[in-house]
Image (cartoon, rainbow, N blue to C red; front, side, top):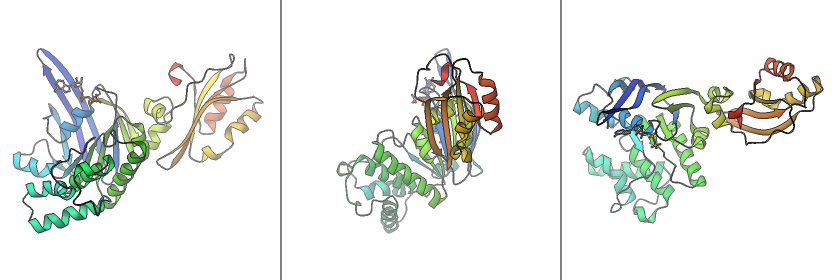
Length: 330
Ligand SMILES: Nc1ncnc2c1ncn2[C@@H]1O[C@H](COP(=O)(O)OP(=O)(O)OP(=O)(O)O)[C@@H](O)[C@H]1O
């Protein structure tokens, strides 16, 4: 379990103060994957550095499985850091070392016995699907294979927590999905607690149980994936279930609707149209399954002059979220 409480980081640039983190709190339960998304400059990198205390927070606390990192002494901090495995955009392997030697490196640092190192490093390579590649050099491996070696190396110290900083940003879509599947599988098999910092919503959709949106150093939206997706009009919902832009036809009212779960399979829109004797025009739509729940997000247009209020009230009564399509809906 990762617990972050009221984390603040203020940088000084001459006379100017830059508030990079402005009171970030979050909790990631053991065995789950939490995504942190945000635009450039939101504070994602600062958060990663403060979580591992590579950069000292100005205030606030970070604890892993109840052990506080922020107040740990030098020795304790070194031990606590070993409980955190890190994966970066690039695996940053040592070119002069083979795959197995790269994975062995963290074990050498903590002076693990030599025969144990060799067995453990080979086991870890097998765990990430690289059995048979022990003696390959990084130059002989693909980007995805290098990232697998990086993951094996991150697991060498037997961490409780995996911190993934843009883990797939340098990979092609197919390799991205393979690496994400590996992270998901390892999380379940090893009971890890995982924090993924990413600018790719695809990563969140694919593996995260919960997500936070960071903006201006603050968490402005957060929750379980299915809850944030269901929050029609919120930024996370719009990025998880995007609608293509589409010009309305004529002057009829335009509504945005979002339904989830069982509703998705019901011919709810058809029955609503029949009930109110309306010809509804679907301008744009997206149907997706997120965290095991099916979502439908549609932009619909009523005929010219038709009052949208009774239809909206009826749909809401059926458990569907409805709002007038605003400018930000495109
Ligand atoms: N060492 C530093 N000194 C001064 N300001 C900094 C420092 N590091 C980050 N900042 C500032 O803190 C804010 C957050 O930056 P950060 O790099 O954490 O954002 P980010 O979300 O990781 O962005 P990106 O996705 O572009 O990497 C920015 O305004 C940045 O200019």
